[in-house]
Each structure stands twice: as C-alpha cells, then as structure tokens.
Length: 183
Image (tube, one colour):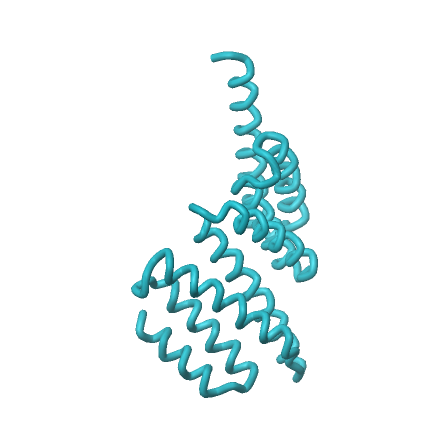
C-alpha cells in the first residue's frame, strides 16, 4: 500500500473514531463533548472528502441533533440546514438522508410548539414549519419506500399531533386515521 493510501485510511479511521466517540457522549447526554468530537470529525471529513460529501452532511445533521437535545434550537437549525444543502446538492442516493433531516426539523418545530403550548401559547409559524417539513419528509418516504412503509405511520401520527396543537381537529383526525392504517 502506498503512503497516500495509507494516510487516507488513517484519516478515515480517525473520522470514524471521532464519530463513534461523539455518539458515545450523545448516549450519555453529554452534548458538549458530543458536539466537540463531531465538529472535529467534520473538520477532518471536509479536508478528506470536501464540503459537499454525504458524510459531512450526516455529521452536520448529527451536530444539529445534539443542539436540539440541548434545547438550542437556532444552532440546531443552522446545522440541519447545512445538512439539507449538502443532501439537496447531491440528491441521488441521499433522498432518505434528506427525508430524515426534514423529519428532524419538523420535530424541532413541533417541540418548540409543544413547549409553548404548555405555556398556553402556540406560535403559528412554528406549527406551519412543522407541518411543512413533516410533509416534505412524507413525500420522500413515499418515494423511497412506497405506501407500505412503517415510517409513514410515525410521520402521519406526528402530523396529527401538530394539527391537534393548532386546534385543527379535522386535519388531526385525518392524519391519525392515516397513521392507524399502518399499525
């Protein structure tokens, strides 16, 4: 094996190791260290593969998830949208990754809406964003898996909850019914 291939393999192993360490910290709910290790992996991945690589997109999505779990929604959105930009650019073969990121964004807006609802306030923009991104996710899941996907049950159920929070009971009921078809 030549030295360039050996160096590439070494960097790829380092990226993998940093990613696994980041995941370990996430599982322990140590979000600061999880983010730190994921950001180190991003730097190496960009050097190794370039900015528009699917692994970079996945790492951005992972960092966004960490910030979401910390309750830092603006930072989470920043990283999730970085991820979307990469997956939209690459498109082919990355539809499912894109659908997952859309779902994560919808979950973020739903969480924000639900948190505010518990304080007797619902932000209509957050509700609309949540619906928009859940629907984008549904469209991709239908394309990738077809109508018989178990993932659709969860997405339709989540849409039912969002519509329920928005006091749009008829739409909520329709999505809950759609969800039940998959159970």
